[in-house]
Structures are given as structure tokens and as C-alpha cells.
Image (cartoon, rainbow, N blue to C red):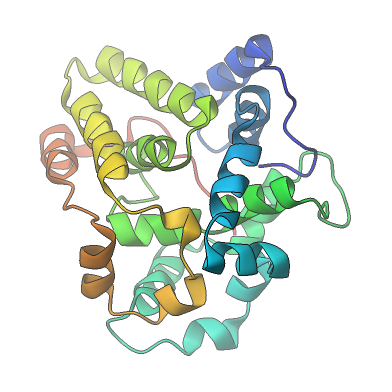
Length: 250
């Protein structure tokens, strides 16, 4: 996920330290990328190889389009017709104040001026840059801890990588301590199951997807309604955001 390739060996000590920091301060989004680098050994390679096994994926991998640049173009974002995935994503950006480039800047742990021109690093940036589009498709809110934890679990089911699972489990354990309820945990588990059942979003043609009607896209991709998530929102109320949410800064 960061500009340096993810190491071949997992660094659990660094991951534990970053998780403690993240759970105490959800605004510290940098810790998400520290965890990914520490635990996602071999993940980029496996997913990139999956991508290039399809004709469309091979073409995407060859082109290596940087989606953060595309998604940061105001004219491009304004171009989507009402009812499309792109229009819903535009509404998401307006409501949250988040930007694709803001998340890209936070993920740059090495402060590299130019993104690493390596296929595995590029694939990591692709997952990073489509994170908020996944929020839009799944219906998980980005400005609450519950929604972020559910999407993290969904992402683990989609692309693997122990970093995603580590964050989801850590947030769930904290929620039980804080809320004295398993509603949060049930919603996170549903997020994982929904991610397993859905089509592989990492292999989507995003310019085409953004122009697709959102209800049609959800049906085609097998993205289910997050019922346990909505129940948890109602049951927990303000506790759904028991800590400042992990978010992409503007």
C-alpha cells in the first residue's frame, strides 16, 4: 500500500504498536498503512498475478493508470450522470470532504516524490485509490468507526492481506469493551461475508464502473445490502462512532 514494496516477512511488533495508536486515535490514518506494510507480505504479488490472468486486467496492468490523479480531476468527477456510481461517489466526496489525493499523501510513508514504478506497488495504490468507491458501492459510511471496520473486513475478503483482518479484529474487540454489545462485531463479520460473496472489485474497469447505474452495478457485482450493519447503527447510535473514524484527509 505504501511506496516501498511490502516486505516478505511480517513485522508483528510494528503492527501491534501501530494498531494501538490507531485505536486510540482514529485520525492517525498513517497507522493503517504502517499495519499494511507490516503484515501484508506477499499480498501484492498474489493479487497482481490474479489481475493479469484476465485480458482486461492485463491491459490495466500494462497501462498502470494512477487512479488518484484521475479521481482528483474536478471536471472528471463532475461529468457523471445522476444515478451512476460516479455520481454517488461525487456525493460522497462532497459530504465527507475527502479526496483521493489526500489519502495518497497519507499513504506515502517514505515521502517519495514519485510513486514507485513497480507492478506490485501500483496494484497497492489501485486498492488505496478505490477505497472510497468501495464505500460508495457497499453503503458503509466512511465518517464512522463502524462503517470503516465493516469495509476493512470486506476488503480482507476481497484482496486478502492480514493487515485488513488485524484492523477489523482490533476494532471489534475494542467495540465489545466499549459498547458491551456484539452488534458491532456482527456487522463486521457480515462485511467479511459480503466481501467473499461479491465479485472481485479489484479487477473492475473503474472508468466504466463509475458510469454504470449504481443499482445495476451492485446487482452485477453481487454486493448485498448490509443488514447487520444497519441494525448495528440503530442499536449502537452514537457508539457506532465510539472513536474518531479512520478517514482520508482532505
